[in-house]
Length: 286
Ligand SMILES: NC(=O)c1ccc[n+]([C@@H]2O[C@H](COP(=O)([O-])OP(=O)(O)OC[C@H]3O[C@@H](n4cnc5c(N)ncnc54)[C@H](O)[C@@H]3O)[C@@H](O)[C@H]2O)c1
Image (cartoon, rainbow, N blue to C red; front, side, top):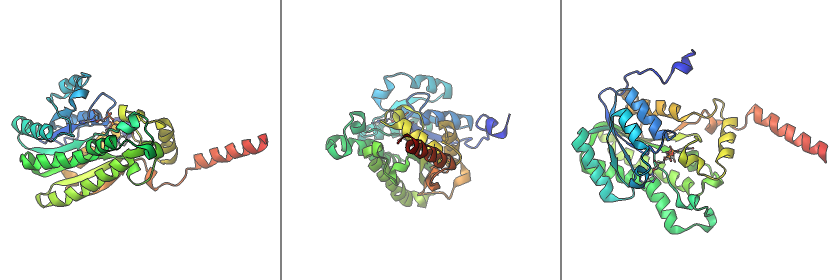
């Protein structure tokens, strides 16, 4: 077994004694699901939360059993829901040392509305659920006193915040807002040693990911460009564990790329060769 193959199976005890809230596990492909398993492996206790409609699918019960974590319903676009969740969490765990925000949803993408023919009510829902919810979560976590000094908050983002991927439509805008809220809130919570970061994950085959038209093309493009290849959801989980741990106490207000080197790469040798072959085939056909 290589060192890489063994990685991810053994516990380093990095989150021993830590408590948290994990938003966004839907099924076993969800990045939040993989993060919950990694947090458990590293010794954390947490509560799981998702929208009531998602909980009706029933799959979260399996994760709840496996990690011994209660499930508290919460629609993150609702103030009363988020406040209630924070109160229930405080009653169950006391304070929390980490929060994972792994939530994204665009009705415009779901209903195949083009960006330049957008439905503005749905646009507001995209921004509210996928970005403003981070602000709401932090607001009520502070207000209810559930957020411990020295806590770490991570929200999952995508490079669509910086570079436009046309099929990602209004989610490009939502991720830009999400990253800005992380910086803005991070500066306000730093006095208590609380850090707030976003992790910009490469395309990953999950329910939300594959629901985007053209996802396969985006996935393959990133895989061909990134020198290390696309990271899996489990590899994202290991990275998030380090951010929740005490090893990263002075990292805050950052957007951290977890993309195998995609963001700083131009084009790969493999792609140059493929393109050269494509054009020489075309020339010989004409
Ligand atoms: N899959 C990818 O390619 C990829 C890449 C980069 C970033 N991300 C981000 O990772 C995060 C997790 O997505 P995923 O790919 O694991 O897909 P996923 O579908 O498993 O997770 C999205 C979650 O958001 C939840 N959600 C939607 N509306 C909600 C609401 N109103 N209240 C509470 N929860 C709600 C869903 O129920 C679901 O659990 C998202 O922020 C996504 O944008 C995904």
